[in-house]
Image (tube, rainbow, N blue to C red; front, side, top):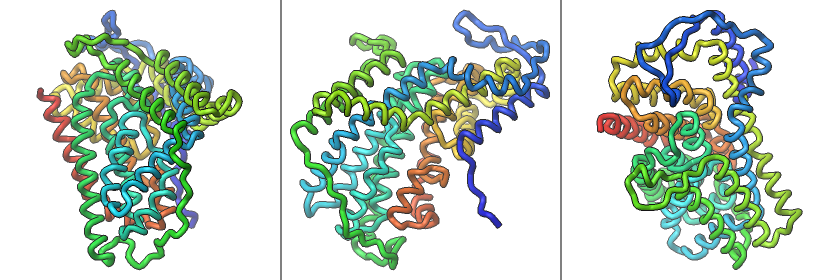
Length: 459
Protein backbone atom coordinates (compact mmCIF):
# COMPACT_ATOMS: atom_id res chain seq x y z
CA UNK A 1 0.00 0.00 0.00
CA UNK A 2 1.46 3.32 -1.04
CA UNK A 3 2.32 5.56 1.89
CA UNK A 4 0.12 8.64 2.23
CA UNK A 5 1.85 11.95 1.63
CA UNK A 6 0.45 15.26 2.76
CA UNK A 7 -0.38 17.35 -0.34
CA UNK A 8 1.37 20.66 -0.89
CA UNK A 9 -0.10 23.94 0.27
CA UNK A 10 -0.92 24.74 -3.38
CA UNK A 11 -3.04 21.60 -3.74
CA UNK A 12 -4.79 22.21 -0.44
CA UNK A 13 -5.57 25.79 -1.45
CA UNK A 14 -6.85 24.67 -4.86
CA UNK A 15 -9.29 22.25 -3.24
CA UNK A 16 -10.34 25.01 -0.88
CA UNK A 17 -11.02 27.25 -3.89
CA UNK A 18 -13.28 24.57 -5.36
CA UNK A 19 -14.93 23.94 -1.99
CA UNK A 20 -15.65 27.64 -1.52
CA UNK A 21 -17.11 27.89 -5.02
CA UNK A 22 -19.43 24.96 -4.22
CA UNK A 23 -20.31 26.64 -0.93
CA UNK A 24 -21.54 29.74 -2.78
CA UNK A 25 -24.25 27.55 -4.27
CA UNK A 26 -25.27 26.16 -0.88
CA UNK A 27 -24.73 28.90 1.71
CA UNK A 28 -27.30 31.72 1.73
CA UNK A 29 -25.92 35.04 0.48
CA UNK A 30 -26.07 37.96 2.86
CA UNK A 31 -24.53 41.29 3.82
CA UNK A 32 -23.92 43.48 6.85
CA UNK A 33 -24.19 47.24 6.89
CA UNK A 34 -20.75 48.85 7.06
CA UNK A 35 -19.47 52.07 8.52
CA UNK A 36 -17.23 54.48 6.63
CA UNK A 37 -14.15 52.62 7.89
CA UNK A 38 -15.66 49.35 6.56
CA UNK A 39 -16.21 47.86 10.02
CA UNK A 40 -19.33 45.76 10.31
CA UNK A 41 -22.43 46.96 12.16
CA UNK A 42 -23.51 44.15 14.45
CA UNK A 43 -27.12 43.06 14.13
CA UNK A 44 -27.61 44.44 10.61
CA UNK A 45 -27.21 41.20 8.64
CA UNK A 46 -29.76 40.60 5.89
CA UNK A 47 -29.99 37.96 3.17
CA UNK A 48 -29.49 39.05 -0.47
CA UNK A 49 -29.77 37.44 -3.89
CA UNK A 50 -27.63 34.33 -4.36
CA UNK A 51 -24.34 34.87 -6.26
CA UNK A 52 -23.02 31.34 -7.09
CA UNK A 53 -19.47 31.13 -8.45
CA UNK A 54 -18.75 28.98 -11.53
CA UNK A 55 -15.54 27.24 -12.73
CA UNK A 56 -14.49 30.36 -14.63
CA UNK A 57 -14.69 32.36 -11.42
CA UNK A 58 -12.51 29.76 -9.71
CA UNK A 59 -9.85 30.10 -12.42
CA UNK A 60 -9.84 33.90 -12.16
CA UNK A 61 -9.95 34.08 -8.36
CA UNK A 62 -6.18 33.71 -7.74
CA UNK A 63 -5.45 36.55 -10.20
CA UNK A 64 -7.93 38.83 -8.48
CA UNK A 65 -6.31 37.72 -5.24
CA UNK A 66 -2.93 38.87 -6.51
CA UNK A 67 -4.38 42.27 -7.38
CA UNK A 68 -5.84 42.60 -3.90
CA UNK A 69 -2.64 41.54 -2.13
CA UNK A 70 0.03 42.87 -4.49
CA UNK A 71 1.57 45.09 -1.80
CA UNK A 72 2.03 42.10 0.50
CA UNK A 73 3.41 39.88 -2.28
CA UNK A 74 5.96 42.50 -3.40
CA UNK A 75 7.04 43.05 0.19
CA UNK A 76 7.68 39.30 0.59
CA UNK A 77 9.82 39.27 -2.54
CA UNK A 78 11.85 42.27 -1.35
CA UNK A 79 12.53 40.60 2.00
CA UNK A 80 13.61 37.46 0.14
CA UNK A 81 15.99 39.46 -2.02
CA UNK A 82 17.45 41.19 1.03
CA UNK A 83 18.06 37.88 2.79
CA UNK A 84 19.54 36.42 -0.40
CA UNK A 85 22.19 39.15 -0.53
CA UNK A 86 22.92 38.76 3.18
CA UNK A 87 23.42 35.01 2.92
CA UNK A 88 25.66 35.55 -0.11
CA UNK A 89 28.08 37.59 2.00
CA UNK A 90 28.51 34.70 4.48
CA UNK A 91 28.32 37.18 7.34
CA UNK A 92 25.74 35.25 9.38
CA UNK A 93 27.70 31.99 9.16
CA UNK A 94 30.88 33.85 10.07
CA UNK A 95 29.24 35.47 13.09
CA UNK A 96 28.06 32.12 14.45
CA UNK A 97 31.48 30.55 13.92
CA UNK A 98 33.14 33.45 15.71
CA UNK A 99 30.94 32.94 18.77
CA UNK A 100 31.78 29.23 18.81
CA UNK A 101 35.51 29.95 18.79
CA UNK A 102 35.24 32.52 21.59
CA UNK A 103 33.41 30.06 23.85
CA UNK A 104 35.95 27.26 23.49
CA UNK A 105 35.53 24.98 26.54
CA UNK A 106 32.31 26.72 27.63
CA UNK A 107 30.04 25.18 25.04
CA UNK A 108 27.02 25.07 27.35
CA UNK A 109 26.80 28.84 26.95
CA UNK A 110 26.17 28.25 23.26
CA UNK A 111 22.68 27.03 24.09
CA UNK A 112 21.26 30.31 25.45
CA UNK A 113 23.37 32.49 23.14
CA UNK A 114 22.36 30.70 19.95
CA UNK A 115 18.74 30.25 20.99
CA UNK A 116 18.46 33.97 21.69
CA UNK A 117 20.04 34.65 18.29
CA UNK A 118 17.58 32.35 16.51
CA UNK A 119 14.74 33.71 18.62
CA UNK A 120 15.52 37.27 17.59
CA UNK A 121 15.62 36.12 13.97
CA UNK A 122 12.30 34.34 14.35
CA UNK A 123 10.53 37.24 16.03
CA UNK A 124 11.88 39.90 13.67
CA UNK A 125 11.81 38.37 10.19
CA UNK A 126 10.39 34.88 10.63
CA UNK A 127 13.74 33.12 10.47
CA UNK A 128 12.82 29.49 9.73
CA UNK A 129 13.83 28.10 6.35
CA UNK A 130 17.07 30.08 6.71
CA UNK A 131 18.01 27.95 9.75
CA UNK A 132 18.65 24.93 7.52
CA UNK A 133 22.15 26.23 6.90
CA UNK A 134 23.05 25.93 10.59
CA UNK A 135 22.38 22.23 11.15
CA UNK A 136 25.61 21.01 9.50
CA UNK A 137 27.55 23.66 11.41
CA UNK A 138 26.10 23.17 14.88
CA UNK A 139 25.41 19.43 15.16
CA UNK A 140 29.11 18.41 15.04
CA UNK A 141 29.96 21.11 17.59
CA UNK A 142 27.40 19.96 20.15
CA UNK A 143 28.13 16.26 19.60
CA UNK A 144 31.86 16.86 20.03
CA UNK A 145 31.13 18.80 23.23
CA UNK A 146 29.48 15.74 24.78
CA UNK A 147 25.85 16.44 23.96
CA UNK A 148 23.77 14.82 21.22
CA UNK A 149 22.16 15.78 17.93
CA UNK A 150 18.83 16.40 19.67
CA UNK A 151 20.38 19.30 21.60
CA UNK A 152 21.72 20.92 18.46
CA UNK A 153 18.44 20.50 16.58
CA UNK A 154 16.48 21.82 19.55
CA UNK A 155 18.70 24.90 19.77
CA UNK A 156 17.77 25.78 16.20
CA UNK A 157 14.12 24.70 16.04
CA UNK A 158 13.03 25.75 19.53
CA UNK A 159 15.09 28.94 19.48
CA UNK A 160 13.60 30.15 16.21
CA UNK A 161 10.20 28.56 16.94
CA UNK A 162 9.72 30.42 20.22
CA UNK A 163 10.59 33.65 18.44
CA UNK A 164 8.10 32.97 15.66
CA UNK A 165 5.37 32.14 18.19
CA UNK A 166 5.84 35.60 19.69
CA UNK A 167 6.55 37.37 16.40
CA UNK A 168 6.93 41.02 17.31
CA UNK A 169 7.43 42.33 13.77
CA UNK A 170 7.64 39.10 11.74
CA UNK A 171 6.63 40.25 8.24
CA UNK A 172 5.60 36.73 7.16
CA UNK A 173 3.10 36.19 9.98
CA UNK A 174 2.48 39.27 12.09
CA UNK A 175 2.84 41.74 9.22
CA UNK A 176 0.58 39.93 6.76
CA UNK A 177 -2.01 39.06 9.40
CA UNK A 178 -2.02 42.64 10.70
CA UNK A 179 -2.49 43.96 7.20
CA UNK A 180 -5.53 41.78 6.55
CA UNK A 181 -6.89 42.44 10.04
CA UNK A 182 -6.69 46.18 9.45
CA UNK A 183 -4.34 46.82 12.37
CA UNK A 184 -0.82 48.21 12.60
CA UNK A 185 2.18 45.93 12.93
CA UNK A 186 2.93 47.76 16.17
CA UNK A 187 -0.47 47.03 17.72
CA UNK A 188 -0.06 44.44 20.47
CA UNK A 189 3.73 44.55 20.30
CA UNK A 190 4.00 44.92 24.09
CA UNK A 191 2.16 41.65 24.67
CA UNK A 192 4.24 39.90 22.02
CA UNK A 193 7.46 41.12 23.65
CA UNK A 194 6.29 39.62 26.95
CA UNK A 195 5.50 36.34 25.20
CA UNK A 196 8.92 36.40 23.53
CA UNK A 197 10.71 36.64 26.87
CA UNK A 198 8.57 33.96 28.52
CA UNK A 199 8.57 31.48 25.61
CA UNK A 200 12.25 31.87 24.75
CA UNK A 201 13.16 31.57 28.43
CA UNK A 202 11.08 28.40 28.78
CA UNK A 203 12.63 26.89 25.65
CA UNK A 204 16.18 27.67 26.82
CA UNK A 205 15.52 26.16 30.26
CA UNK A 206 14.00 23.06 28.66
CA UNK A 207 16.94 22.45 26.30
CA UNK A 208 19.61 23.17 28.93
CA UNK A 209 17.97 20.75 31.37
CA UNK A 210 18.02 17.96 28.78
CA UNK A 211 21.56 18.84 27.70
CA UNK A 212 22.79 18.65 31.30
CA UNK A 213 21.28 15.16 31.70
CA UNK A 214 22.92 13.93 28.49
CA UNK A 215 26.27 15.47 29.45
CA UNK A 216 26.20 13.75 32.84
CA UNK A 217 24.94 10.41 31.52
CA UNK A 218 25.12 9.84 27.74
CA UNK A 219 22.89 6.77 28.07
CA UNK A 220 19.97 9.11 28.85
CA UNK A 221 20.15 10.53 25.34
CA UNK A 222 17.03 9.91 23.28
CA UNK A 223 19.30 8.80 20.45
CA UNK A 224 21.75 6.76 22.56
CA UNK A 225 23.36 3.96 20.60
CA UNK A 226 22.84 5.60 17.24
CA UNK A 227 25.75 6.74 15.08
CA UNK A 228 25.60 10.47 15.68
CA UNK A 229 29.31 11.29 15.54
CA UNK A 230 29.82 13.98 12.94
CA UNK A 231 33.52 14.27 12.29
CA UNK A 232 33.40 16.63 9.34
CA UNK A 233 32.47 20.04 10.56
CA UNK A 234 31.67 22.52 7.83
CA UNK A 235 34.23 25.25 7.31
CA UNK A 236 32.70 28.61 8.19
CA UNK A 237 33.97 31.80 6.53
CA UNK A 238 36.08 34.18 8.65
CA UNK A 239 34.47 37.21 10.29
CA UNK A 240 36.23 39.88 8.28
CA UNK A 241 35.77 43.62 8.63
CA UNK A 242 33.44 43.69 5.64
CA UNK A 243 31.28 40.94 7.13
CA UNK A 244 31.09 42.90 10.39
CA UNK A 245 29.83 45.88 8.41
CA UNK A 246 27.31 43.64 6.64
CA UNK A 247 26.03 42.36 10.00
CA UNK A 248 25.74 45.92 11.30
CA UNK A 249 23.73 46.99 8.24
CA UNK A 250 21.59 43.84 8.53
CA UNK A 251 20.72 44.75 12.11
CA UNK A 252 20.18 48.40 11.17
CA UNK A 253 17.60 47.54 8.50
CA UNK A 254 15.50 45.58 10.99
CA UNK A 255 15.89 48.23 13.66
CA UNK A 256 14.63 50.85 11.19
CA UNK A 257 11.71 48.58 10.26
CA UNK A 258 10.81 48.04 13.91
CA UNK A 259 10.92 51.76 14.67
CA UNK A 260 9.04 52.74 11.51
CA UNK A 261 6.00 50.57 12.23
CA UNK A 262 5.54 51.35 15.92
CA UNK A 263 2.63 53.79 16.45
CA UNK A 264 4.32 56.01 19.03
CA UNK A 265 1.54 58.59 18.88
CA UNK A 266 -1.10 55.98 19.72
CA UNK A 267 1.09 54.78 22.57
CA UNK A 268 1.36 58.33 23.94
CA UNK A 269 5.13 58.47 23.50
CA UNK A 270 6.82 61.75 22.44
CA UNK A 271 8.67 60.19 19.50
CA UNK A 272 8.20 60.88 15.80
CA UNK A 273 6.17 58.11 14.16
CA UNK A 274 6.97 57.16 10.56
CA UNK A 275 3.76 55.25 9.92
CA UNK A 276 5.45 53.05 7.33
CA UNK A 277 3.68 50.06 5.83
CA UNK A 278 4.27 47.60 2.99
CA UNK A 279 5.35 50.03 0.23
CA UNK A 280 7.84 51.87 2.44
CA UNK A 281 9.08 48.65 4.06
CA UNK A 282 9.53 47.07 0.63
CA UNK A 283 11.70 50.00 -0.39
CA UNK A 284 13.68 49.68 2.85
CA UNK A 285 14.60 46.05 2.17
CA UNK A 286 15.37 46.77 -1.47
CA UNK A 287 17.74 49.61 -0.57
CA UNK A 288 19.18 47.60 2.34
CA UNK A 289 19.94 44.60 0.15
CA UNK A 290 21.61 46.71 -2.52
CA UNK A 291 23.63 48.64 0.07
CA UNK A 292 24.89 45.49 1.79
CA UNK A 293 25.86 43.89 -1.51
CA UNK A 294 27.73 46.90 -2.83
CA UNK A 295 29.42 47.83 0.44
CA UNK A 296 30.51 44.23 0.95
CA UNK A 297 32.00 44.30 -2.51
CA UNK A 298 29.80 41.83 -4.37
CA UNK A 299 29.57 44.18 -7.31
CA UNK A 300 26.54 45.22 -9.32
CA UNK A 301 26.01 41.93 -11.16
CA UNK A 302 26.58 39.61 -8.19
CA UNK A 303 24.39 41.75 -5.92
CA UNK A 304 21.58 41.69 -8.47
CA UNK A 305 21.90 37.94 -8.95
CA UNK A 306 21.85 37.32 -5.18
CA UNK A 307 18.85 39.59 -4.73
CA UNK A 308 16.89 37.97 -7.54
CA UNK A 309 17.83 34.49 -6.31
CA UNK A 310 16.69 35.36 -2.78
CA UNK A 311 13.43 36.78 -4.08
CA UNK A 312 12.92 33.63 -6.16
CA UNK A 313 13.27 31.51 -3.03
CA UNK A 314 10.17 33.24 -1.64
CA UNK A 315 8.23 33.33 -4.88
CA UNK A 316 6.25 30.34 -3.65
CA UNK A 317 5.14 32.36 -0.63
CA UNK A 318 3.94 35.13 -2.95
CA UNK A 319 2.02 32.55 -5.01
CA UNK A 320 0.38 31.20 -1.87
CA UNK A 321 -0.68 34.70 -0.87
CA UNK A 322 -2.37 35.27 -4.22
CA UNK A 323 -4.09 31.88 -4.32
CA UNK A 324 -5.29 32.02 -0.73
CA UNK A 325 -6.46 35.61 -1.17
CA UNK A 326 -8.44 34.29 -4.14
CA UNK A 327 -10.48 32.23 -1.68
CA UNK A 328 -11.56 35.42 0.06
CA UNK A 329 -12.36 36.92 -3.36
CA UNK A 330 -14.67 33.99 -4.15
CA UNK A 331 -16.37 34.28 -0.78
CA UNK A 332 -16.89 38.01 -1.19
CA UNK A 333 -18.12 37.73 -4.78
CA UNK A 334 -20.46 34.95 -3.74
CA UNK A 335 -21.74 37.10 -0.85
CA UNK A 336 -21.18 34.34 1.70
CA UNK A 337 -18.44 36.02 3.74
CA UNK A 338 -20.91 38.05 5.75
CA UNK A 339 -23.14 35.00 6.16
CA UNK A 340 -20.26 33.06 7.73
CA UNK A 341 -19.47 36.07 9.91
CA UNK A 342 -23.13 36.14 10.92
CA UNK A 343 -22.96 32.49 11.93
CA UNK A 344 -19.78 33.28 13.84
CA UNK A 345 -21.52 36.21 15.49
CA UNK A 346 -24.28 33.89 16.64
CA UNK A 347 -21.88 31.19 17.89
CA UNK A 348 -19.24 33.44 19.44
CA UNK A 349 -21.40 36.37 20.41
CA UNK A 350 -22.33 34.78 23.71
CA UNK A 351 -18.89 33.29 24.30
CA UNK A 352 -17.49 36.49 25.73
CA UNK A 353 -14.08 37.93 25.06
CA UNK A 354 -12.17 35.14 26.80
CA UNK A 355 -14.12 32.34 25.13
CA UNK A 356 -13.75 34.01 21.75
CA UNK A 357 -9.99 34.44 21.81
CA UNK A 358 -9.43 30.91 23.16
CA UNK A 359 -11.65 29.43 20.44
CA UNK A 360 -9.70 31.39 17.81
CA UNK A 361 -6.41 30.02 19.17
CA UNK A 362 -7.72 26.44 19.24
CA UNK A 363 -9.12 26.81 15.72
CA UNK A 364 -5.74 27.81 14.32
CA UNK A 365 -3.94 24.75 15.73
CA UNK A 366 -5.41 22.23 13.23
CA UNK A 367 -5.55 24.83 10.44
CA UNK A 368 -1.79 25.36 10.81
CA UNK A 369 -1.21 21.66 10.12
CA UNK A 370 -3.33 21.71 6.97
CA UNK A 371 -1.80 24.97 5.74
CA UNK A 372 1.78 25.14 7.12
CA UNK A 373 2.49 28.42 5.33
CA UNK A 374 1.86 31.13 7.95
CA UNK A 375 1.49 33.77 5.26
CA UNK A 376 -1.00 31.65 3.32
CA UNK A 377 -3.01 30.84 6.43
CA UNK A 378 -3.06 34.50 7.43
CA UNK A 379 -4.21 35.60 4.00
CA UNK A 380 -6.90 32.92 3.93
CA UNK A 381 -8.37 33.23 7.40
CA UNK A 382 -7.61 36.54 9.09
CA UNK A 383 -9.95 38.59 6.84
CA UNK A 384 -12.76 36.31 8.05
CA UNK A 385 -11.82 35.85 11.70
CA UNK A 386 -10.66 39.38 12.57
CA UNK A 387 -14.02 41.11 11.93
CA UNK A 388 -15.65 38.72 14.40
CA UNK A 389 -13.49 40.20 17.16
CA UNK A 390 -15.57 43.36 17.26
CA UNK A 391 -18.66 41.31 18.11
CA UNK A 392 -16.87 39.79 21.12
CA UNK A 393 -15.26 43.05 22.20
CA UNK A 394 -11.75 41.77 21.45
CA UNK A 395 -8.96 43.85 19.91
CA UNK A 396 -8.12 42.62 16.39
CA UNK A 397 -4.45 42.67 17.34
CA UNK A 398 -5.20 39.89 19.85
CA UNK A 399 -6.61 37.79 17.01
CA UNK A 400 -3.30 38.30 15.16
CA UNK A 401 -1.38 37.22 18.26
CA UNK A 402 -3.56 34.11 18.68
CA UNK A 403 -3.04 33.21 15.02
CA UNK A 404 0.75 33.54 15.03
CA UNK A 405 1.17 31.75 18.36
CA UNK A 406 -0.84 28.76 17.12
CA UNK A 407 0.93 28.70 13.76
CA UNK A 408 4.33 28.99 15.45
CA UNK A 409 3.86 26.21 17.98
CA UNK A 410 2.52 23.80 15.35
CA UNK A 411 5.50 24.54 13.08
CA UNK A 412 7.83 23.07 15.71
CA UNK A 413 6.32 19.59 15.50
CA UNK A 414 4.34 19.20 12.29
CA UNK A 415 5.73 16.72 9.75
CA UNK A 416 4.58 19.08 7.00
CA UNK A 417 7.38 21.50 8.00
CA UNK A 418 10.38 20.91 5.73
CA UNK A 419 12.75 22.50 8.26
CA UNK A 420 11.73 20.07 11.00
CA UNK A 421 12.04 16.97 8.82
CA UNK A 422 15.23 18.23 7.15
CA UNK A 423 16.95 19.00 10.45
CA UNK A 424 15.98 15.64 11.93
CA UNK A 425 17.20 13.84 8.82
CA UNK A 426 20.58 15.54 8.96
CA UNK A 427 20.97 14.73 12.65
CA UNK A 428 19.73 11.15 12.14
CA UNK A 429 17.06 11.74 14.77
CA UNK A 430 13.82 9.77 14.14
CA UNK A 431 10.66 11.86 14.11
CA UNK A 432 9.11 9.89 17.00
CA UNK A 433 12.16 10.67 19.18
CA UNK A 434 11.72 14.36 18.44
CA UNK A 435 8.06 14.19 19.50
CA UNK A 436 9.06 12.31 22.66
CA UNK A 437 11.57 15.04 23.43
CA UNK A 438 9.47 18.12 22.72
CA UNK A 439 5.86 17.24 23.59
CA UNK A 440 6.02 18.46 27.20
CA UNK A 441 7.35 21.86 26.15
CA UNK A 442 4.72 22.11 23.42
CA UNK A 443 2.00 21.44 25.99
CA UNK A 444 3.46 24.08 28.31
CA UNK A 445 3.60 26.64 25.49
CA UNK A 446 0.00 25.93 24.44
CA UNK A 447 -1.32 26.26 28.00
CA UNK A 448 0.74 29.38 28.64
CA UNK A 449 -0.50 30.97 25.41
CA UNK A 450 -4.10 30.24 26.32
CA UNK A 451 -3.61 31.83 29.75
CA UNK A 452 -1.93 34.92 28.31
CA UNK A 453 -4.64 35.38 25.67
CA UNK A 454 -7.40 34.93 28.25
CA UNK A 455 -5.89 37.49 30.63
CA UNK A 456 -5.28 39.93 27.77
CA UNK A 457 -8.91 39.60 26.63
CA UNK A 458 -10.07 40.52 30.14
CA UNK A 459 -7.79 43.54 30.57
